[in-house]
Length: 216
Image (cartoon, rainbow, N blue to C red):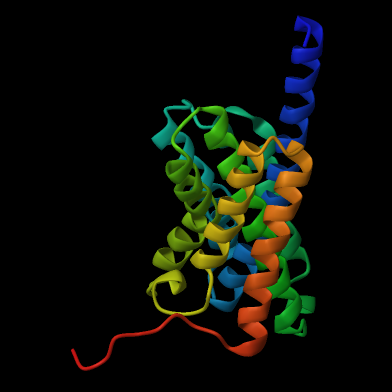
């Protein structure tokens, strides 16, 4: 591959990652803003939760990778999209009170899948071990939700309910495996996100949870 072709390939891959990241940011910001409304937070609280829900996981990932300053703080588009998601929730909060829960869950699942594969993809760019790339994908997908739940004063749901982190890890794992198999980057990420979304929504529909230990 020529130098020009290598640069073009890298630029295309970077654009794909940016689009996936920003789309996930908007989806999770909307879900985070909705959680803030349901938690009876004020206008600033809605914007804060939209921001940390959508960007918290990516910031933690970049700190662990040594990618400083984190992308979410270096690139103005991330913060703008996150806060725009919160603003949309504020403007449409009356509609939100009549909005069915399932579309919100689907939005959250879609954002989870996109963040998980984006995180795994970025980790592979830093040439970390495959297992670390999978874990960083999971952190990218779930980290913001953990921060959101802590700010709302509740145990993060990934620790005691739903197949949530498991779905993110599955999407990240599939993405890493496909990338190592030299599958097209776009296809690898699309299939990983689809696997995460499918498992998450199936778990919601069938009320799956991971086993709990009892008697302690």
